Length: 83
Image (cartoon, rainbow, N blue to C red; front, side):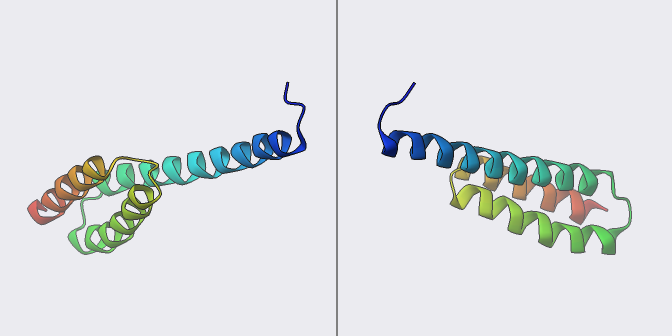
């Protein structure tokens, strides 16, 4: 266990950040699943805007890799265009 005050604080802040990252990642995955199950094109287009924004935020903060974000956006856009 850590002995320094700064190390204890770092442990606390790391845990808080980890929980925040997990929440954002899981929420984004849920929205992606919801988008994939959508059959209405206009609804899907609105949802796509929100999902792309969420994916970009995850990539910006290095929660997911930028190439994975790009691949997700590309695939989802193709899906919505094919509806």
